[in-house]
Image 1 (tube, helix red, strand yellow):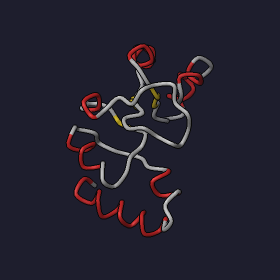
Image 2 (cartoon, helix red, strand yellow):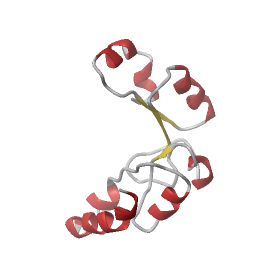
Image 3 (cartoon, one colour):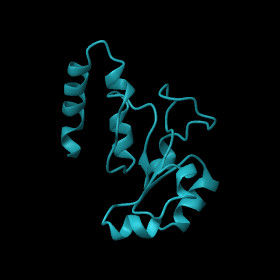
Image 4 (cartoon, helix red, strand yellow):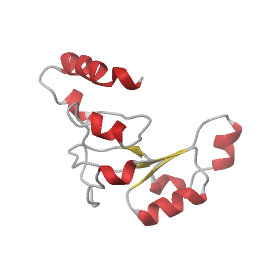
Length: 117
């Protein structure tokens, strides 16, 4: 869930349904808010500049993700740094969808992440 969704979310219903609660954060204040909800995971981002949507937050950089999931601006060329900082998973959108050859790029992602799966 995004920060704007958290205020209206029924966290108890989410947990009763057996779903994992994940919360997005962009800065320390949002992180503090997210942790109060006792989520199963927290996403911190963007880590790199992203073109998926306009962001009012500055990129967080690799140093901030040692124990957090990361998001924002991932490419095949950057993924090793993300995992080397301790991230356990990563998601990608525009590096595949905006590529001239999305199927080939998806295969490149599979190859680049094979050692961490």
